[in-house]
Amino acid sequence: MLGSSEGMITQLGTRMKQSDWESVLRLETNKNGRDFVCGDIHGCFSYFEDRLIDIGFCKNSDRLFCVGDLIDRGPESRMAVDYIEMPWFYSVLGNHEEMFIMAIAATDAYDGYLYKCDHIENDGGWAYKEKLAYKKRLYQAVEKLPLIIQVEDVIIAHAALPAVKSLKDIEIAPRKYIETILWERENIPPVAIPGISKVYVGHTIVTEPTDYGITTNIDTGAYL
Image (tube, rainbow, N blue to C red; front, side, top):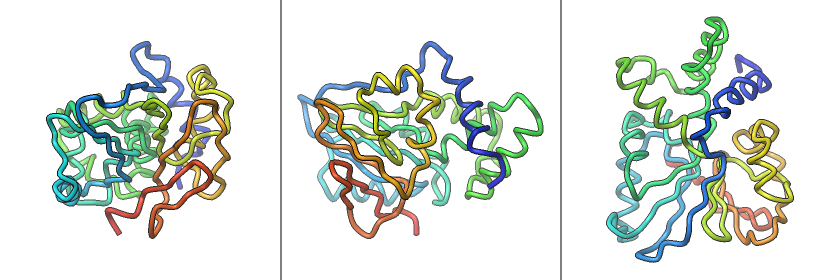
């Protein structure tokens, strides 16, 4: 992988200084319909829509929460921005969105080149073939995705929830936890946050939803 994890953390920290960015998005339970959580979509939005039909999803009342990685690998990645703008669709930031952000936001040309190579190596080449207007629209959409979504006593994160005493720890120092939240694969931290009963993550493909304490990995692979 080109570009160190530390470099990614530092650059993302610059973006985190924006006053309108929420590292933790808190929402109440849906009182008008149902709430669903899905794994990484990876540009497979037609497949995603078929699954919504299977569960009788109602876009006027239900809500869908995604564990991130909306883009890359699959053939319909450019549709991600349309879904992010849907009022019923919520997603956390995934590591693939982060790679795109790093490539676009880099202030140093060489760093930008390394981040772009890293993203292309991970099936992100499609993004750099798009017109400037689209790349700007996608960037503006994904850069505001939260690291974590909390719906009452349920948490949605991309790869793992760090072993923190409170989500406030993440809000105060998001750079400290970004690598675990977006990249962790093998050592899922034990979670014991008061008031939290369930954590949903993705990032690592599993053959079926897999539990690690109160954490469940639901990424069964939209794109294989």
